Image (cartoon, rainbow, N blue to C red):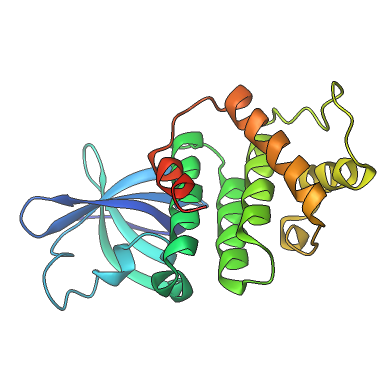
Length: 216
């Protein structure tokens, strides 16, 4: 008899598997990142089709096999539909998901990363902050979640507002992370710092970022 578990999570990516199935990467509150198959999810009218698309957030009923999980049911709370009609916003979202996929591990406590990704996708959908600022915040906080954020760089002269923003990004509650805006000069300094820190502390080439850079 199969034993089922319920997890709360967000789909990071999907790929075809077999003729009609999908393989997904799922970032969960309970078990960190895991891989799962969704049988028949590519068939027309499948109840798992939209539930296994990138960004889908909710509860997933899984059963565990020898090497992976299988999705039996899904109760999706947020599809982030706004990103489906916003190509640039979707590209930012795919970049965030790719970073989360790279920086997380199975059976690790990845609750903070999952919350960060969720709040960042919400910020992209809300449109009240520039996407470039959302990206800077996401990148710097990702490094902080991984325990490697060094604070404002000491080898360059930054505006006082930039220093304050960097400290706020690293330590504020995630629910309040996207509640500020900045002037253009501060945004440019944040962009430079986040780019430098991503190279230094993550050091990975993200394909989605290459696409994004052709658009912005």
